[in-house]
Amino acid sequence: MTLRLEGPLGVQSGAAAALVRQEIVPHSTRLGLAVTARLIPVALLVHADGATRAFAPDGAPLPLEEIERLRPGTLAEIATWA
Image (tube, rainbow, N blue to C red; front, side, top):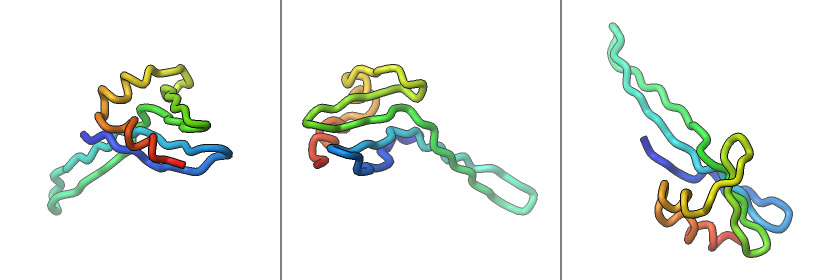
């Protein structure tokens, strides 16, 4: 399992990205090996007017400390977005 940022996408006066969990699962089949992958949303991050906000997939606000705990360095990366 890996957490990564998808984006950023430019929006009005800032940018938005999704923090997603990437899962890659190998499967054995009678013909060999197969792999499936999926992205599971963890948070929506919005950076606008010099401020960053985070939201859970259900729209509830998330503390930025939680984002940094899940993926250290995320807030510093977001701060570089125009």
